[in-house]
Length: 57
Image (cartoon, rainbow, N blue to C red; front, side):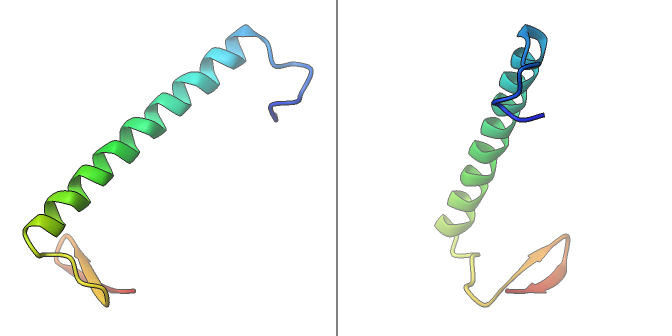
């Protein structure tokens, strides 16, 4: 389904709005985590870790 679809009824519209809200909350959380990591000088340009696993960028 796309936004130009004729079957974009009220329930689909509400579902899309809820998805966008969840995405916005996740983005704000991620941005805050990155901000905290930068503040504590824990952000490196060549790699990062997730749960102790080194991930090269």
